[in-house]
Image (tube, rainbow, N blue to C red; front, side, top):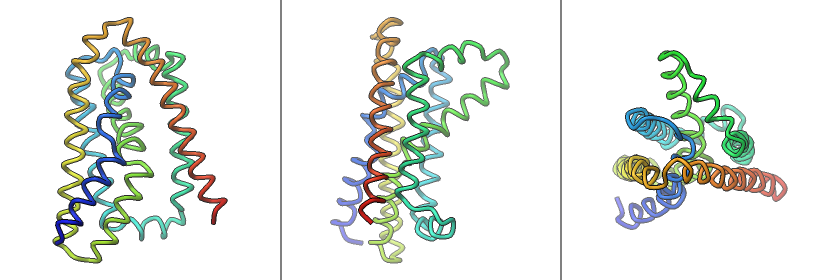
Length: 209
């Protein structure tokens, strides 16, 4: 197992997943939730993202090929879904819906759904990180030591995401209610731009092939 491979894998996964960049989005998505619920969302999202990236590390190319799904199509679909979430954040539809959650069972389902989408997919384990994982696993060329090293790198970066999510609670407390509302709308616009960029990247890739 080459140290250069581990260095390349760490830098690539850190840049594509971008834990610090996800923290503000986490604040906007979990606005109004208690500290305990936010912790559960962060933990579930981290575990799901790691599981997804692990699956693609060991069989990503075969899975995409078997389903007949191209990475550009994955980018476009992820972008459209992200845009829907951004729309809800900008017009405060998500926070209104959160207030209407009446039963604990529904609340639990909501936490699970939020952790799965959009946090685990496509923000943490999205087109960029999945593509990077597949390419890095291909470079390992069946070397189990290299694959184990890649999995350790992925786990480390996902752990960074978890701690970034946990620290976002302190940031939200400093901003206060008004600041959080303003930040949520601003981040909704940023998320919408990110979503459109996903779509543009997917379309350009298709046009270039």
